[in-house]
Length: 74
Image (cartoon, rainbow, N blue to C red; front, top):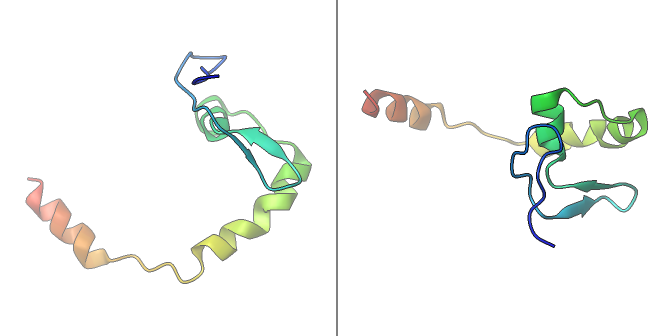
């Protein structure tokens, strides 16, 4: 049905619904949490809290690439 708009600030907020087979949420949920301090249900937070660690396991940040980009942007 097209893109939805934030009900608070009217920002464009995506057009998808996401699920983990337990919960369903709109694509723009992060916008509400980040920009409007909307709190998520405790059950949702508990369900997803452990996933952040698994998503970042093995994540390697290329410090040299970031430094080179910073030096070329001046």
